[in-house]
Amino acid sequence: MNQYDPKSLQFNLSGMGCWLTLLTTFLLLGSVGLGWLVNGFLVLIGLALIAPAIGWLGFRWWLRRNLVEDKCPVCTYEFTGFNGTNCRCPSCGEPLKVEQGHFNRLAPPGTIDVDAVEVSVQQLED
Image (tube, rainbow, N blue to C red; front, side, top):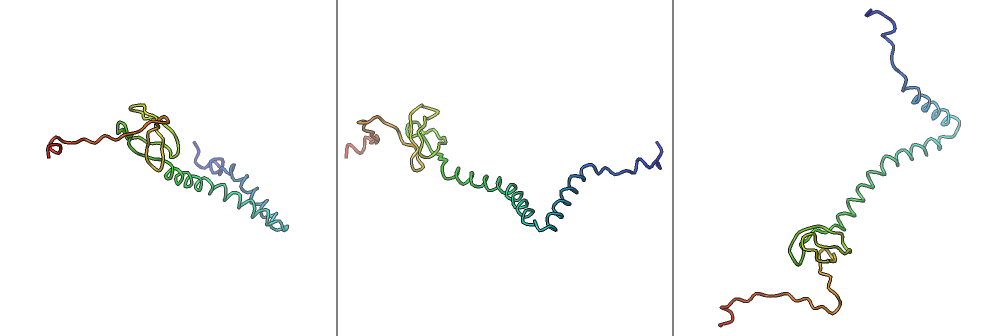
């Protein structure tokens, strides 16, 4: 291969044509008095770049407020659910309602939910 061949010294400017055309169009619009159009286009480009970041931060904020991690009141299996929804425990299958950051049993109307307390034998003899 000949090192002094003039064809090997060419620059590849194929992608620059689009950017130069866009820059020339913006300069032409600005000089004619339509700078507000250029500014509006740049604002739209800026919003398109910033919107995903703001959306991601908003989604994380919403998730932190609504995602609840607690234990099942029946089998004490720890899992997550969304605040204000009904779900089932993945371990025991008990229907639960997520309220105020805790899981509560869903019982049919008229059911009385009782918590059992263990009493030792020595306390009964006293």
